[in-house]
Length: 392
Image (cartoon, rainbow, N blue to C red; front, side, top):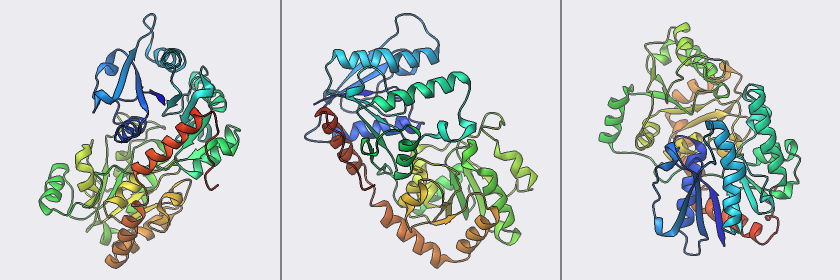
């Protein structure tokens, strides 16, 4: 079987689509009975840099444009013209687009991964008229694709409802945390990361982005509501690169911290290097993820994999991912979130129980299984069959 992969995000490892593409490609290359993989990427700029782990086992092609184009038009050209044409020229059996941008050309061979439909669900994410047109094109092409993969049953329900595709053409394949995410027990490693990022001895951790749906304002309000007896002992660590400017879409959490008078108790780490994240999770007393909407919620699984007790929203995909291994709260209820954090901070026994459940739950998710199920979907598309339906 010849597989053509859209590698637009290959060198953008700070994006979810980039991480997904790399993990999937690496997993396929580890298989003895692997497909013949062809990775297609746009030429120019960041696309020129290659970091293929095993170049003998995967063929790479850089695709240009017929004339200089703006960044957005060049991306559209790659997705809808040069990439599908190259796949058809190479006579691939399956075209895989690992993000929500399938081509109209070659639809009967196309499998697209739709991680979520946030632009169709949340008004703030719909963008300009041009962005909405682009999303509409992606929706039309997804309806024509041979099959759709998605990360959760929650997202599958959204896809069936909003894209109006038969449920049997949408297959749920859960993601997994990278194998590097496991409990860090070495005191020296924990101490070094604590010093590097200026972390307090005891802290509640948030890591997961700063766009509007991440709901940081509610987390900060809940932290303030716990009172000085708790916050004097336990800091709040907000990890990740902060927005360059305050906006409705990317609200800067620092003014919120100032309004509550918490400047001395909240630590903003800035960008966290990938190799430091396991220790950052492992050193936390709690991990809190109050997001309003998630297609999967990978940071929650990463925290559980590191043996940290988790509090998460009771919305969208998060209950599906956490099962009974996290304390779930209404993301709009700051008082309820404050009560949940206080309850866990005051009970080491309860935290240990949740952490143990989290480790057990995280073991149910593996990239080996993700790759195996994705390969089954490739085979179904190559045989011109619909993928075997999942349990829903």
